[in-house]
Structure formats: structure tokens, C-alpha cells
Image (cartoon, rainbow over all chains, first blue to last red; front, side):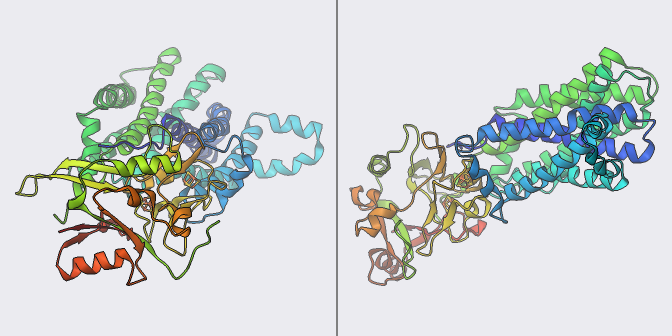
Length: 311
Length: 192
Ligand code: SF4
Ligand code: SF4
């Protein structure tokens, strides 16, 4: 069996960070439209991580490029082939990064500081505060999170990735980890007494959805073409089984789901350090989700099962 | 460099029962193109015939880039560094390749690898400079069993056209890899 040389852990980091960044901004924009005052501490926390995480993610992608570092002008060529998912992604990420930068600067008061220095910048303020901005961020944020899966999904050579469920899974996971990321920042830096019950409830349901979707995808993959089955088995019982069961399933999904279920039922109250701990578990689970799906696909057995199909 | 001759369409056939797994093709290719240590542009797949067949047998199957007519690597390459030439060869322009590696998992045939020395994707080019200089690809020249047949399938007098016609006349088994994926490969497998 031969393994591929493409797509290393950098790519998993990129998919993860882009997901957390985009997810946090999408949830913050929804909360903003719903009740800005009530969720202000969450919106501010999301603004701290939104655009920066996406940018750090892009940086990881950038250092993975064989020639991008030495020949930066080649990056312009990323826009030339309209059939390439990388071209779509570059476009979406560029728009999302610019919008979320403006939105973040507005929420954190940095925009006001700049306006004092350079008055003409005030033209941006009505835009940053508008409902249009919220919608634009929700749409481009979902596209960013979804794109990280479409990038993998369009490759029919890797059947485990070539599934419509993958973008849905990544969007759900991005929203869930985005909430976690913002919660951690909120606990650490914006310690206002805020009632975020709606966000916590949403978070719980997102994790439940993620678990169901993952089970569904694996059950379907087990009945799929040989490569797909090979990928699923690599996760369930094969070379990635320990990481899959311990880091993704147990720590990343089941433990937070159980804890948040008790919180939902009013039987438990977590805050401060404990909350940060469980949110970090969700974040680690989010990373392992990408890491494992990436590797289960790349390290799959390729066409050898079909090579003698006409034999 | 070696502009494409539109009248030609290059293709290769392996007469698989002639392959003895000597790996001379792999070595010749590596030497011709100075491929980094652990990489090869062509491989020999060695294996026991799958359980689906009643007759247990061992196979030696060469493989390499199939120069697909509908090549996924060309579709996904953001920079158009990977492109399909008018003469059927799928080539990579190293000056344009940003080294994103996207084409590598896109290929159903595992034909590509990342050339760490150059920072670009790499694969078989049917030895472009050689074939325009009137030579055969290095692997074809080297193959002691003459398992590899190369040429222009638009020319009925070429060696490959003759081999395919001969296979059709004699009802030999002829197949391409993973036809189900619709990539339209241009490497033919012939078994007598
Ligand atoms: S075999 Fe792979 S690398 Fe070659 S043209 Fe087809 S998809 Fe591209
Ligand atoms: S590695 Fe090079 S040839 Fe392959 S998709 Fe990226 S830019 Fe194109």
C-alpha cells in the first residue's frame, strides 16, 4: 500500500483555526442581531479571536506552500483557475477576513480610536454597526467554515471526503468550537456577569448534532466503496483508533455533551475555570475531528483493490 | 519549451504479462529526472489477485500518471500550473506551481508526489523533451521485457496503435484503471 505525500498536519491546523474563527463570528453576529446589549461580552470575546484565528490559519497554509514563501507573487495565481476549490476559498477568506477585521475593530472600540486619529475613517462606522454587516458576516462565515470541508469534499479520489455531510459537519463543528473559543476568551478577559443561557443551549444542541452526524457518516462509510470503508475502519479500529476514541469521541464530544446536558437540566452549574476546561475539551475535539478526517482520507488505500477489476 | 503538436495524442500501454518486476523502469526514470531519494514517478504494484477472483495469482502492474483527458489534478490546480497539453500530455509548469499540494490527493491513481527539493508537485511527463527529440520515454527504452509500449495513438502506424489493434484483433484483455471515475486515462493495460 502506498501513502500520499500531500496534506500534512498544517492543513488540519488551518481547517481548525479557520473553523473556530469563522464560527465565533457567525454566532456573535447572530447574537448581535438578537440582542446586542445582552450578549456584548460574548460579541467582544468573539471579536478578539475571529479574524486573528482565521489569519493564523491562513499563515499555516502559507508555510505549507512549497514555493509561496520564496515567490510570493505566485499567490496571485491562486485566483486564476475558477474550477479550483482553492480559488473559491481564497476569495471567500479574503472577503471574510476584511469584514471581520472591521467588525472586530468596531466591537472592541479600536475603530473609535482610529477615527480619532484619522477622521475620514468614520465612514466605516455605520457599515460596521449595520445589520447588513451582520448578515454579510453570517454568510461569509458559514461559507468559510463550509469551504474548509468543500476543499476536501470535491476530491472524488478520496471517497471518505467526497460526502455532502462533510461541509455540514464542519459548519456545525465550527459553530460549536467558535462558541467555545469565545467563551474561553470571555471568561479570561471580559468577566462581566452575563446571561448567555441561549448560547449555552445552542452549544449543547450543536454538540449533539455533531455526534449524530458523525455516527451517520461512519455507518454510511462502512457500507461504501473499499477506500471509504478502509478510512472508516482506520478510525474505528485501525491506526487512528486511539486518537479517535479518546480525543475526539470521549474527551471532545461525550464528556462535554454530558456536562452540558446536566447544565441544561439545571442540575449543574459550571463557570470560571471549570467552564474554561470543558470549552478547551470541545476545542481539542474540534481539532481532532479535522486531523482525523484528513488523515483517514489521505492515508487510505488507493486503487489497488480495483486494479484487476477486468481480470 | 517543446510546444505541443496538436496532431498527436500520446499514450502508453503496458503488456502486463511481460512485466517481471525488475524495476528497471523506476530506476531509469529516476536517473533521467533526478527525482529525490524516496520518490518515484512510476511504480510497480505487486500483489496477490483480489479475493474476488477464483484463480489465485500474483500480479506485477506498472503504474504512473495516466495523462487523463478529464484530469482531476488539472481541475483543482488553482494556478493552472497543472495543465493538459494539446498533445495529450498532462504537464506541470514549475514556474507557476505554488506548491499547495492540492493536486496530490486529487489524483485517484496516486501518481503525484511532492518534490521537496523543488517545492513543487511532480509526476511523469511522458519524458516530454525526449519524445520531441525523437526518443522513447526512458522507462520504455530501458524495459528489458518490452512490457511498455509508447506512441501517438492518432498515428495508426505507431507502435502503440499496432499493439492496441493487435490486442483488439486477438481479443486480449484491455483495460484502463478506475474507468468508473470518468477521468479518461490514457494508459492501457493489455493482458494476453
Ligand atoms: S493520473 Fe493523476 S496526475 Fe496524472 S493526469 Fe490523471 S489525475 Fe492527473
Ligand atoms: S501543487 Fe502546484 S501543480 Fe499542484 S495544485 Fe498546487 S499549484 Fe497546482
